[in-house]
Length: 238
Image 1: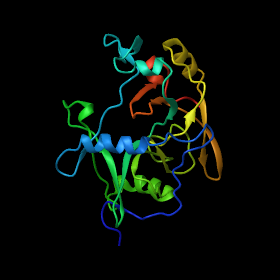
Image 2 (image 1 turned 45 degrees about the vertical axis):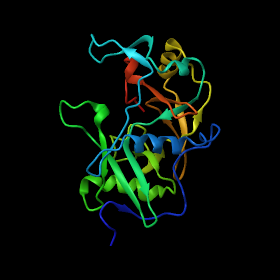
Image 3 (image 1 turned 90 degrees about the horizontal axis):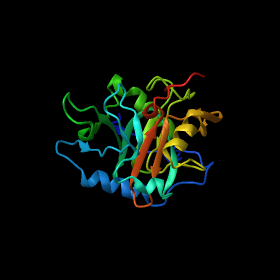
Image 4 (image 1 turned 180 degrees about the vertical axis):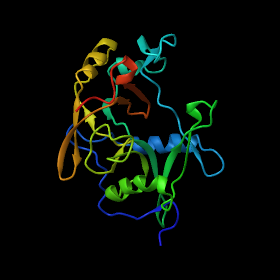
């Protein structure tokens, strides 16, 4: 049998990411794993670092929309540094691998009153019904590379992208999107047009609506912005 939390070692290396826009960011996977290693915590769980939102929020109105002021530390995005990648709305998971097998980990929601930045990863259990769709996504993708992934598919997060099957989308080795604006008004206008991103979804390519954008710097820094941050609806109608 398969040990609890273990995943079958795959050989196809399918990670679900499209090479439509210029490939992946060299070395970013190693940088992300180093961030996870530095923020490790006890008890088998691994602390995760929250990706900062590109713009500051107005905490007064409902929904806390962003305002036209860059979050300190994210100025590199407006300076044109790094690349833009698609942000998908799924379940955040981590794949680890040793000399024997791969293991699948999921993000655990922190207890009430604990900051989201203190969320951590805990092992998935192949025999736990609540983890079955995460393993379905893994088994359909069999990634060869450890790292961070977004599990997406018909039975995950309400499937806002309308995928036909479950799979893993690489977070730390994503595909690039060209011509994404780098200003407050520009990003908002671009997201309001409901941009679609072509991804492999057997039996072919599927152009999916995206939840937002993650900007990735060559040194491993990240910044994100979502439709909801601007008060734009998500999910979007078919």
